[in-house]
Image (cartoon, rainbow over all chains, first blue to last red; front, side):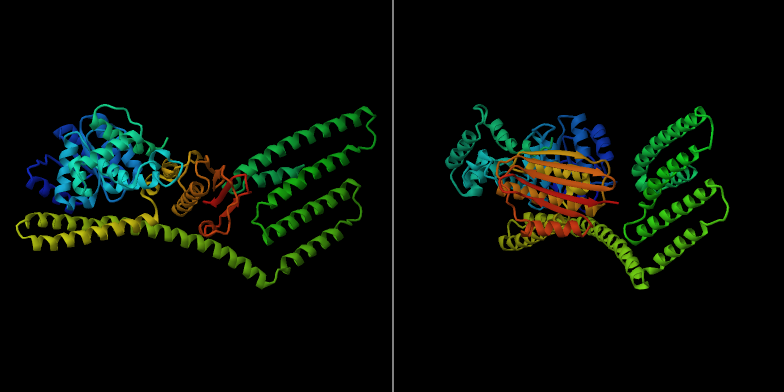
Length: 218
Length: 349
């Protein structure tokens, strides 16, 4: 389902998804509508704009958080015109699986957008590269941040891509390096960030969340 | 005594903005009143006990009433805006209290020839002279300052509202259309897989649209970060604190949302100070205090770094200009070896 007040964009996304065999069961124009649809149609995934009527501030995020609280297994992909780490942090605090935060213009990269939709619907995470980049930039600014300062530039790039939910193969393609090199970088990141050994997928999420948790105020 | 009560009534009808001052002022007055009444009663009893001769307690009563009337009168005159108006009000109050006093003295002393007419006449003339003394030029100037203060405030408020409107229009208008455009281009690109040259053209067009969206986003962000507009100053400052590499403690006592310009200025004071702290005092703890009292917002950012910041540096100068444009004040205290304190006081009436 889709909650987006701008008809042009909403209809475009609906058309895009339907062309690729994804069924759109309902559309809503505001937060209240989103909650009604979630209760009524039981969608697998909700695509939500941050700014919705009537306040045009953070209605969408609030509605998405409420929907996740009512139905913890609902996957939510938030679309926003700007990077706001506070909102990303809040979204992730409702659980690390089945959430995504993308800038709106990513819908134009059709393949990547559909990948993100499918990944989030399947219980994965998708974070916009701008979101991740801004976090890594900000956390890495001060010398005091020992954790991140110990990463090499290449390791940071790899971490950014992990945070976007990319697979190792995709990371290798993006950075034009071998799969083995990617695995080596990732293992270095895990060691430097002092993450427990175990399930690799889980450690990937932890590596990213180590930063994101610090973003939540309080 | 009557005079004192009358002034007390005057004081309690002051405008809302001074309510708190007046309330503490009237508490003091009430205490004084009780004390005076007790003393008056005591001297009257003494007078009665010592044989009820000449009724001298009336002089004590008079003295007590005068002691009450003077501070109350000056307090009420102080409510006038600072400068010429306040000076005139004080002058008027003192003249009136003195005039009433000489009439009372005349009456208590047994009447007779009404000599108080001379001092009262003199005081009246002096007051008229004072009131007329401010040349028309001076009076125009004072009025002009008042008007400019008011209109500057109005202009800034209009500007703030305008900026938010532009940001909203960008979001709902140009940005939304560009997003829709780039999405259509993306779909077109996908269908042109078998015509690589055309697909490349469309991709370039899509990338241009994305770049335009990114530029618009940066533009809107420079106006005010979204979380500030959405959730207010405290939430925005907490987000800044969480993102800062320094350990930051935020304590905030803010109930109301201030005018947008004030919130934005306070936000940039914190943002700039945190950036400075992270740069010059890496790892040092930072304390941020935001307090709202009496229609003023006070923002303090203190770090325990090496101090020695240059208050004339470009960052701090920019902040000072921003704060002073709102009639606020920015002070920087940074003794070498004792940390840095940046303090902004912003009126938000």
